[in-house]
Image 1: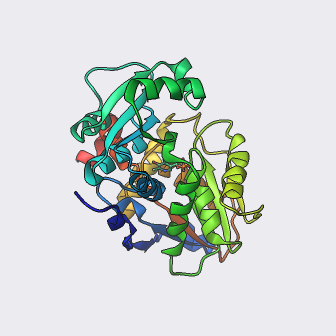
Image 2 (image 1 turned 90 degrees about the horizontal axis):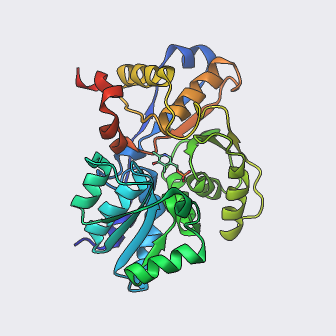
Length: 310
Ligand SMILES: *Cc1c(COP(=O)(O)O)cnc(C)c1O
């Protein structure tokens, strides 16, 4: 078993400059921070979100982690891997009903030793209520609860470190937003400098602003203004995928050799490219886009990514 502090050793991931006619034409520098390469299993932002939570769970002598997610969740995948590596039992509470055969994400989780339980959608919606949590404690005994997507103030602390590992000067740092926990950490890490731009992957995600303000406040940061969230690139909502998005991801892969996922990073890069082509980003701007990982989910959508097998 590995000590958790291994996760605290600096993972130096590449910062790659993208060359593209559009970028050259508009005078924009675009870099990708390859956090998808930071760990084979705890890949991307989920590693940063988990590390201080894992440490706290160990400090409090918990043996079991319990968390929530959808059936394809990158977070479920990461928690299962972390449990196996650092010696926790893990329980994954999955939204909805069981579908057999199990998808690759849940198969992996089970291979890691995760106990999978399903919660109907109505109860799942109330998963943060004392009633549902008490029921879970009656059923499973004591556990360290990690919220859905891993977002809490310890996740914010972890994600600050994504910023610290970027050693070039830049103007804008971009990240896709589900719950907004990662963006909150990046804003905290910026400490008032530069600008953070989030791309919401959920439809109607105006709640994100409040979530992020709450997270920042609980982390002791009062009202930074150097950030905003773009709500225009959700492509119909969470996990909704349109042909033009797949086409973009394919083109990006063929040009740059970097694979994106259609749930998070694909939508962000699509948004960045469109904002640049619409001249909404000033000439001379240097952008760093965080590749937050999520590639494990591609296993479950092989038919849309047939181009990878050519
Ligand atoms: C979970 C996830 C996100 C969203 O992170 P939040 O902190 O919930 O906003 C972004 N990208 C990938 C690849 C993810 O797995």
